[in-house]
Image 1: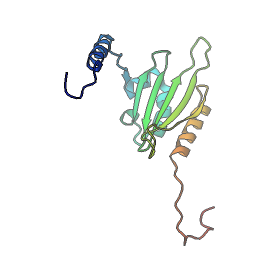
Image 2: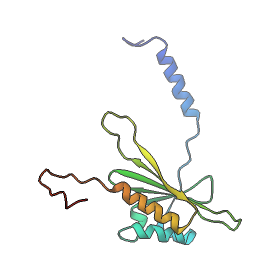
Image 3: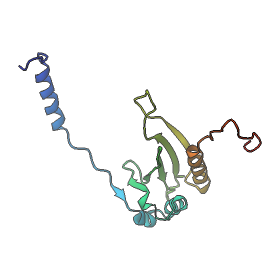
Image 4: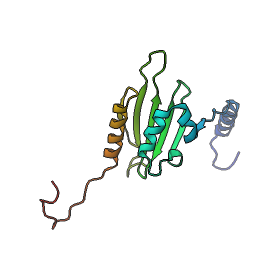
Length: 157
C-alpha cells in the first residue's frame, strides 16, 4: 500500500472503475444541418432565418433530433447565455404541436458553483408563440445602462 493511502479505498476505486466500464456508452446526439431542416420543417427553418444575421443559422444553431418525439431541439448561444428551443410541429393526428424555450447562463456567478436558468415562452407550434420566444430572448439579452452622476435625468426615462 502506498504511503498515506486510505486502507480499502484503492480496492473500492478499482471496483467502481470496472463497474463504470461495463456500462454501454451513451448514444451520440444526431445533429441536423440547417439545409436538411428546410426539408423536414420549413416553418421552423423560416423562423430561425429571422433571427440569424446571415440567414444561414447553420453557423449559429445546433439542431438535433428529439429521441422521445418527432421534433427538434435547437440550441443557440450568445456570449452570456445558452438558449434551448424545443419544436414539435403539428401532425396529421390532430396533435397541436409544441414550441418552447429555456435559457441558461453559460457561467456561474461569483461564489456559486451552479449556473442559473429560466423558462421562457412556450405554447402551441404557432407564429404567435415564436414571436413571444423572440421577444423573451431579446429581453433576456438587454443589460441595464450604467448612468454616470452627471447624466441628465430627462435623457432616459
